[in-house]
Amino acid sequence: MRSSLSAAERASSGLDPVDPAWSLIELAYSSVAALAIVPMQDVFGPGSEARMNTPVMVTGNWSWRLEPDAADDELAARLREAAEAAGRA
Image 1: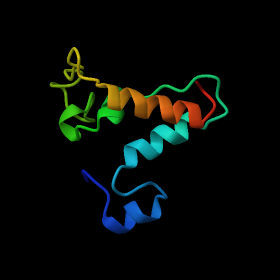
Image 2: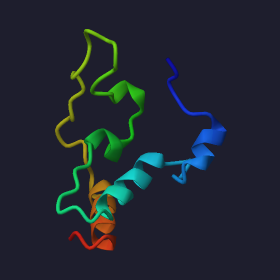
Image 3: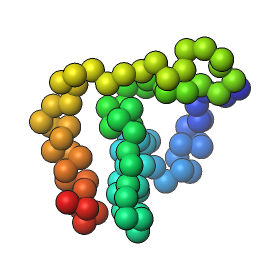
């Protein structure tokens, strides 16, 4: 099983290669859907150690938890800016 995309695959995705999760957050927010749900793992970007579910693994899934006070003002502002840019604020 492959764990990540090659550099060429990342480049061809159209997402920001440095921060692809935020590209996906912005795409979700720009959707015509009435509701956009963004996983906190994508907001924080901690990497694969924060995966909620690993396919084919029987144990160890659904164990990541958001720590109290993990979000800071800078992160909240970034989410707000993305929401405002997409007309969701």
